[in-house]
Each structure stands twice: as structure tokens, then as C-alpha cells.
Image (cartoon, rainbow, N blue to C red):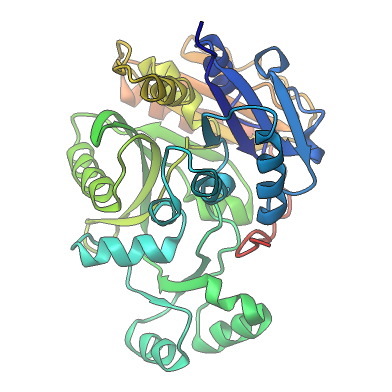
Length: 404
């Protein structure tokens, strides 16, 4: 009898429980390498055959040594990341251990914001004007040519972490002085006022099997840095925005070389010209309970389908997408003052899901009518702010370039 496939997952955050459970349900042996600080999180322990705790997944050489040591006593068939921070680490491990899957060069296209800028710009995809933080003459020329404000962003952070918004060249130079030797891990780009959208996709053998386009409320950078309420909702499928987003998302994924897996891509629709500009793409499931909203509205759980796809590929089987629905969903999230916020008073029939996460208030609404979703989100926003909202200091951009 053939031995079950062994899949090793890595994560520096508590997430991806459904992916672990799915891999186990499909008959795989599940191994999770995570950080010691996450030992007591409510992992689905019945679905994990072996835990390996390490002090810090940013210490790539230490993790490589640990996983190589684990291979002495077991056969590892595949390695997958649960969090964006481990995408590049997993690609390094695959190459070091000669395992299947995306290698370092291909992974960096979905991790390094400078790389994805250069590649998509060269392919004729609209992107904000940008410059690499490398040569000071090139920086001076860029700041003379492109009007502020600009966005100074880490090349390999997740989401809005570590982003600055300088309004003058003097501010840029001050920040670069502060960054010192870390400044080459940043890029400077034009700030484009507009509405921010995200497209979440499942790709199989280079063909998109499932796609869902959403529009944020306040831009994620604004919520992350200033606090408040995070919102997103599915874009009306009959709108002009839906096909435009589908077209640019397909072009981006084809240009960046996505073959198999999930992606979370962000675009901005500029107020000035009404066109969509590519912001970034990550080879991961969207955070902030976006995947829960998509599942409730479409019947597709991207964590589950990602695991199912990976196992099917390993076994040489054909992946089949489940039957989908076409309802509309919206998600609302805020940091809460209460450890266990009471969401039971939000009891409209369209409320189909509530989060169970300490110090977070979050819910999902679903309706066949996108206008009803929009109306509920608008009416709940003021109540959420009054009932729950608090703020926390943004996390520092400590992972940028930390590969030692």
C-alpha cells in the first residue's frame, strides 16, 4: 500500500486552518512548522500529524537546517506557505530539497513589489510611476519629474506594512537616512488617489478557474495606519468595473507567470482618469476574512480549493472546481475594545457569518442584490464604530530583507 503524501506547511501567523484540515481529509500526512510564539493558538490539532516549533521563521538558514534535519526521518513530498511572509522561504526550501513547486525566481514575482512593477510595466500594464531606491541621481530625477505625494513602500512586506507617504523630497531623504542600509529594500512610487479593488483568483495549469472581484471601503493603507473599519464587497458583475478588472487581472497573472495556485491582486481606479492601475499581487489567500466572505457568497473556500488543487497535482489527478453560486457578499472588520465582542444584535437575515477572534469584530453579509449588501455595510459602519472600534499601533516593517 502506498504511503500517504506528506505536506509540510510553514506559517508565522495563525491562519490557514481550513487548508490544514483539507489536506488531512484528503489523506495526507500534515506537518506544520510555525513559531514558538504561536504554540498555544487553536490550531486544528486533530488535522496536524506533527508540529515543529522554531524561534523565528525569518532566520532562513536556521529553518533550512531544521527542515533538512526533519527530512532525515521522513519523506516530505511538498512544502506550502500559509502566510505571505513564507512564500519566498518555501521557494528556497523547495530548491534546496529539490521538491516540486514554484522556485525562488518565480516566487519573487509575487513577493517583490519592485520586481512585479518592472515586469508588468514592461508588458504595457498600467502601474504608478516608480523608481528603485538605489541610485541617488535617479531618485532626484524621479522626484523632479513626478509630483508628490509619493509612496515609499517595502518591497517584500505584506499589505500596507511599513508604507510611508512623503510629501516632499526632503521627507524622502530623511526617511532614507533613517532606513540606512535597509533603504535598498524599498521603492518609491507615485501616489494615485482613487478607489482600491482586489481580485482573488484560483489558477489551474495557467487557466483561471475561479475569480472574484471586490472593492474596498477605505483604502487598506488608510485603515492600517489610521485605524477604523475595514470593508470590502463583491463588485456588481453587470457593472463596467467587473470586466475591466477581470481583463487586467488576467493580464497581470499571465505576465507574472502564475501557473497553479491562489492569488490576491490589488488595483486602483484613479479618480483622475478612471483607469485601473496595478498595485500588487500576492500568491496567497486574502486576509481580513475576505476568504470567508467569498465562500459565503460563492460556495468557494479558497483555502480548501488551494489544498485540493495541490494534492490533485501531486497525485497526477485532475482538479475539479465545485459548483459555485453568484450571490453578493460584503465583509466588515474592526479591532474591538472587547475581548469577545457581542455581534448578536447584528441580526438582519443577510448576516450569515460572524468572526470568533479575540479583540476583533467582524461579520459577513450576503444577498442576491448588491445594493442590499451596500446598504447594510453603510448602516453597520456607524454602529461598529460606536460599539467596538479601537486602534492599535501598526506593526513595524521588521521582516524586510531579513533572510539571515
